[in-house]
Length: 155
Image (tube, rainbow, N blue to C red):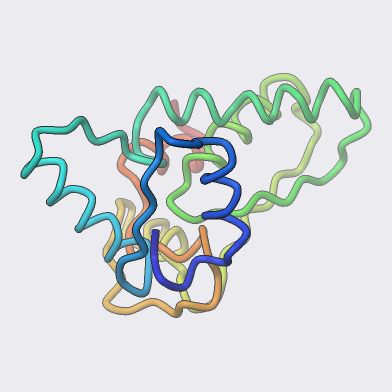
């Protein structure tokens, strides 16, 4: 995880992962930590599971949309979804729009990491030169390949 990660995240991972998890803090932003994770994956012949740009991970994140709709019924008029790499927003948004088409979905990003805004402008994932380190989780230099079509209303 990046050095800027709020302390509650690694603490919860330690609690849930117990002895199965080793946490190392690397770099200032997600992209720094990811580069190190990929390097170690190759060096140690591990399997790397991308935290947002993986179809199975995206599908799993979509279950949050199902849970929200079950809890709220059809009472959700507007839903604000955080957009970092786009995985959570893509599939939660897809589930919600499929089951509650009248729900307006608004994606939000920190000003210092507008990776999805730039992807929409370019029509494809575009790498930001720099990003701010203010927001954990949404501060990524480039959204995933799988997320953009879903967020643009594609498949």
